[in-house]
Image (cartoon, rainbow, N blue to C red; front, side, top):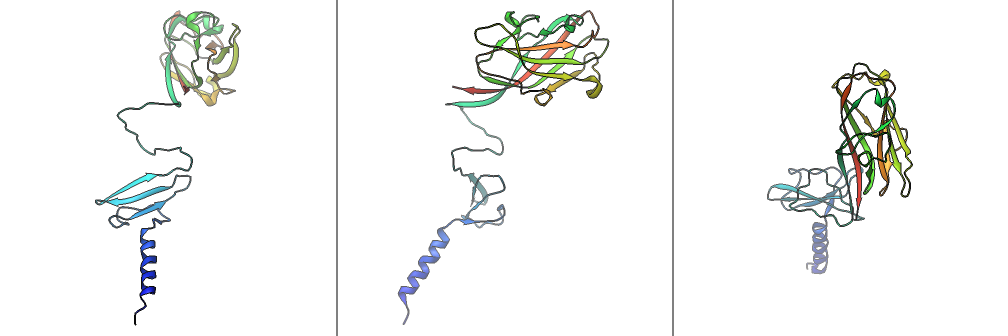
Length: 235
């Protein structure tokens, strides 16, 4: 006589096994799963990912334990609104015209329209940082120079309530190790080239100083300078 109770338990256990999503040790492929099958896999230093084969295609979605999400490839949206904070990179133009002999004394390059200045008190030579900003890189190109020498760049701040320039970080483009500067050639300095992190906190007056170790020649030179900043936007 059949044992119906045992058969029911066996079927129930089998159904439970089928309903449970299987964990696999290697990333699944479309050919390794049957239609409708779901599995989970977690790669090294990756989030737990669920895979589903549907209509012959392999679908996947990441899971999170803390609400943070990472998009491995391109994210495309119709509308995007930030509720709290985000980080992006912003470009500023600092072009100006001056004699190369003048820059043997430190000048502060302009932010947008206007000329350079020997201090951050000129309206064009400083910028009020609306958010915490870190200099990612600065790209430079000079016209009509006739010699080559080191170029010193400083990131500076002026605290709320004073007009004193405080040096935050200094970087030197060393022609003896990096290469000579020629007229109309581009060169750059990156975050890692500075002796300290070139970070300016929100609300402070920010300036960028430039100085040549010697006269690079030329009468009135065009200086094309762009800076790229990592900006931490908080609402």
